[in-house]
Length: 154
Image (cartoon, rainbow, N blue to C red; front, side):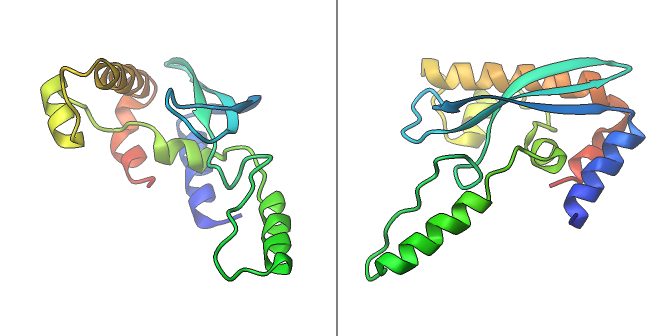
């Protein structure tokens, strides 16, 4: 186990938070996704409450991932890359989740859009902002007293 996963597990233990990742399906995760990936339901639960959300695993760690053929790559090299990719299939770890959740207040819609290069009048960008705000509220519900420690998991 690497130090990042150990750090995440220690944080969950300290905050008495349970972690559960359940595979839902292999398919698109983002509304405009052109790639398929493994999608999981994640549950974080402690004495402060429960937060359940969906998580799209990285492409490389998802089933049916097919690496691209690169110019000059032999068929042997491509097959070796496919074999290595199949070995990477894994559910998200505690670290994957804790490193990716929103730990900072996104501020107002205009502030958020300005920081992210979004258009505050674009309906898709408004939805993203709304989802980030909801995630931040749930993270604060669970980890308010430990948010500084959580922000160190990156």
